[in-house]
Length: 237
Ligand SMILES: [Fe+2]
Image (cartoon, rainbow, N blue to C red; front, side, top):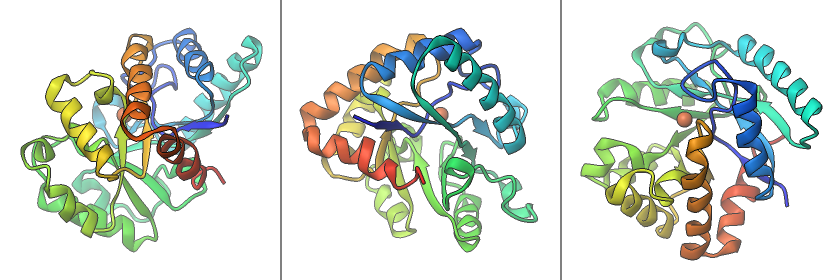
């Protein structure tokens, strides 16, 4: 099996994810035992709370983590990425050089939004990214307040040609019953283009791995393979 995790915070000491290489390896090993052999590391980008890590820094930190993996004998592959926080600052970027696309070599970008609503500038950001040739994938819509209040708003977002990445955590109970209910609904409605762990630390592992099992219960192994192998494979080029 070559399952691909498309969203995690395993790059150590760059955001609110793993603090040390040991924590990173603990998480990577746990997923490796469940058939994951490829990982995009997706630290928060454009989030000033975490110092706004730039693509060149991601590459440097990734090289360090790869050395720890070799020393530890874990046969997984890591590629760079990022979780881009939508903000009006994107609209004044001169080009896409600071946009952390999957692998830093594809036209797919993972974005999230921290605001409780869907502000006007979020549409402008999506337009800006799409006008620069990028396919925008919205992370964990089931966690967003505006969709918790109005789940059908996802239709308006889909009409803007957004793709959606669901989190395993809510399916495994990390977000309470509301979060689990919406994640299950979107999964059953086939809203998701892919599923990611959004795992930050070892204490997240039980809910993420439980979420993977729950996804199989809900939609079957073949559909889960599409969301964790086939579709993520389109980004691993
Ligand atoms: Fe994340």
